[in-house]
Image 1 (tube, rainbow, N blue to C red):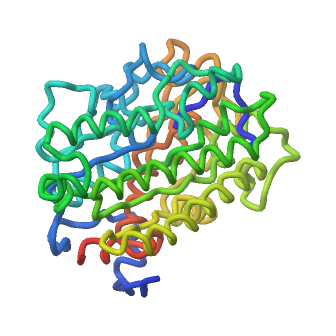
Image 2: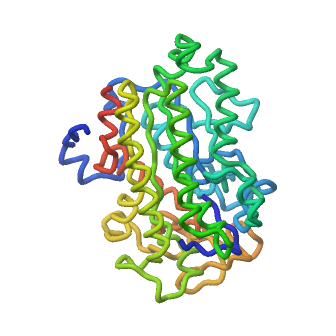
Length: 380
């Protein structure tokens, strides 16, 4: 997920009960010793919350276009990796938990893709880019959408001899039998880019959710067996949303209420469609990762999870309660970063710190925010 500086964000299977230790240690990522049948590869999709390097400063989304500059990557990699954070993302912690290497970006042609590929693109939308062009909503330099990612994936599958589960069942079985298909959060950019346009929010929501569910159905038709789908986080809790929205637009968490409501409705539509997919694709295990409620839990109990700053940027400029200047964002010459990012939820105003991504990964992998639980997916 990545927003333009001109945009305001308006915006059934029995659960397995976890051990007391895991319940009260949600930030601990699943250890390799506790994974009964580990996946051998991961295919990932999404936006900047999942992108491990398909964009860089010259091609990334506007405003947050310093991703190739320090201090991005400083916490873990100690240099920029074109991840929109100070370190690892949720998908990195997932790979580590499965004893797999970090996923290489699809556009890195030299990378070893034996253990999977990451097709996620920062700034990517659910709706095709031409929709935004047609409606004069091209506030972002990123032209990729979920359709782009699907086209890339289809080309990859063809290179493996997999056309679809009907015409090339053996080849597709070989691709998907031991693969986790991870669909990171996607759609928040669609709502952000539509601000102040003549297109109604309801139209954007209808098209965005239709695009996401169409994409998921295409993956299932190809033969995806183990599919995890992340919902949207409460986008109204991001620093940029707080910065741009009027102070009268707040919910009980202190976040932008209109944006959070829109994200929540989006997630409800996706979850209903996943229920339908479970009936039509009984051979597949489909898991929903509840980003909205996991993130909200941390916001409401920040101290419990080690966070002292809920809304303020760690990396930015301007100081004050938010430390955000949309014309001088993280990585720009006039910006600076906080000494301890682990105490912050927000990294640069839209993207999260490694500490927050690690906490989210723990809640998904070990907590109760995957439906059915991640352990069920592993057991299958």
